[in-house]
Length: 424
Image (spheres, helix red, strand yellow):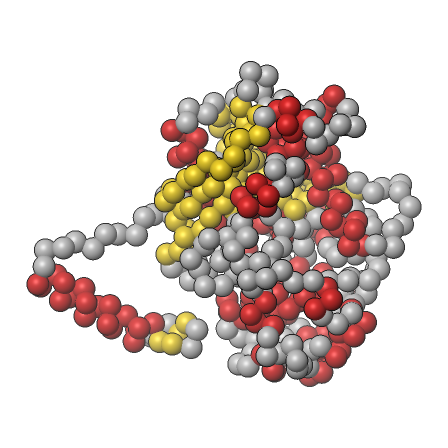
C-alpha cells in the first residue's frame, strides 16, 4: 500500500530516489550517509551569557528568595528528531545553563514547553536574546540553578519540517525528549554538574506538552530508565483539549469571553488537517472568505498576527462556514472533533508528583482543564496530582487573556517553591 502524504504517493516520490541510489551503487563506491538517530546534536551555538547581577536588575522589588543565584548561558540547539509519520526531521531549541560560585549544584534538568507561536522562524533563543535575558525562563528558573531545555517544536524556529503540527501530542513529546538528548551532549562536553534528575514544566501549549512527556516517560520502561523523572509542573495547559474548544465554540465559556478562540481554533484546524488529512479538501469548506484564501499561510506564518486580523469572538459564525460550525458543535464524529480527542490527556494514571498550576480568571485555557484532569486521574487511582490556582481569593477579572498571560510567571514562581525545589 502506498502512503499518501500531502496529496502525493510516497512510492512514486521514492522512485527517482531509488533509481539514483541504484545507479550510484553501480557506478561509484560512494556510501550514502545514514540520517543521524533521534536526539543527535547537529549543532550548538552559544548566543549569550547573563551575569547574576544583570538578572537581579530585572527583579528590584523581589524578596531575597527570588533573587538570582546563578549566571545563565544561552545555547541554541539544532538536533535530529522525527515528524508526524516518524520520518526524519530536524528541530531547534534552547538550552539555558546556570553557573557561578553560589549556584546550587548539582543541577536538575527542567524541560520547558513554550506557549503558542504563530511565527514560523522565531525560536526561543531569539526571544530570550531580544529581551536581554529578561524572561521568566532566565529570571525565575535557570538563574535558580535549573538547567533548562526547551524545544521550539516541530516546524518552528529553524526546524526543516514543512508545517507545525499544533497541539499534536506525539511530536510535542518527540521534540522535547530529543532536545534533552541533544542537550546532554552539550552538558557532558562542558562538564556541567548534573544531578541526573529530570523535571517537566511548560506554559499553555507547553503545559500540554509537559503532561504528554510525563505520560510517555511513565509508559515506557526504557524512557523511565533514560530519564529519572521526579516532578512535573504543567502550567495552564489544555489537557482536555476537545472540551476546551467545545466550551468556547460560541466565543464564550464559563469564565468569560475567549478573545482568541478564532485564531486558536484556526491554528488547530490547520495543524490537524496537515497532520491527519481528514478535515477538508479545500479551506473554503471550513472558512468563509476573505479568510479562507489566506488563513493557511498564517499558521504558522512569517509575520506576527494580532487579534485585529480576525473577527471578534461574537462574530465567529461569520468566520466559519455554517455547516462546519454546526457539525463540530453537534456531531461527536466530526473529524476535527475526533482529532482533538486523539490529543486529550485524561485517560492515564500519573505516578510522578505533579502540580497543575493556572488561574481561575483565565478564559483562554480555563482552569477547568486541570480539575477535569485531576478528577480523571483520581478515578484511575492516581493520588500524585494536585491543582494550584494562583488567583484563588482574588477578585474576578474581566480580562481573561491578561489572566492567562500573567499565570506564566506567577505559576513559574509558585511551582518552583511548592514542588520543584523540594524534589531537587
